[in-house]
Image (cartoon, rainbow, N blue to C red; front, top):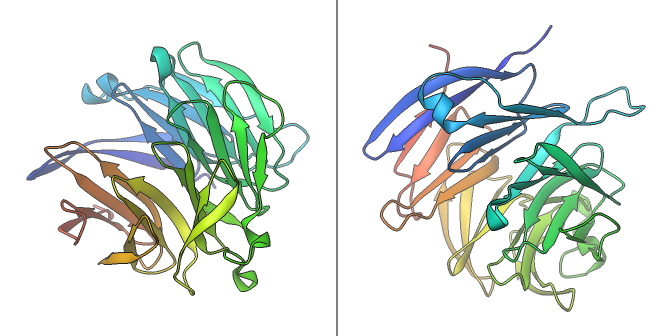
Length: 298
């Protein structure tokens, strides 16, 4: 039986919220989403698709391009777990981390595959790109964080294994890396999952600060201004200072937080969080939940 997945587009212009469009995207789960001013990019099982915002606003949901992940000799199609986009010099370069242990680098303007980053021995959970667009970092089920030259293929430039460091090691939860993020200087990396969430100095490849929550595994993390925001296996989003002090915990509808999104507009900052719940929580000042969007059968 095929499970048909719909993508729901919501127009959020506080205090007005409306569902603008609901349309069929993939014949299976959507594992990752990415949005720019012009495009929505959706990652499913074995494929990713590009959609134009202008088409969606006219209620014309037709994909611009579908890229199929090469299946090779595998009997299963790999899911696309994480995506990040570089828009340097108006050239949209997409990095997609997949369940076949590889990162595919695509030119979405020319709609071509540029190269593949290979080296992980298990599936990739997370991908991020440095602000200089020169470094790509990936985290995997294999317990490693790999730093790549984002401008070309080849082997990883550096490999970090947090579970081999006492400050991060937590064997009862495993060695998998579920989330990571680079700061605006590209000098600092935060990552975690089975290991403790820790901040690393990327140039020396050494851990500097532990963000301590002994019983929480981390699924998502981001740098925002002068703080770090994280979510994981608890019904809270945590706000940390850069020196590792827990500043506040924002209750969430989900018992496990899997994703967060930040609108950094000076006039309308919004933090959105989602997870194991049919609700998406919205926070306008980041310190408490203002309201939730509910997704249910009509």
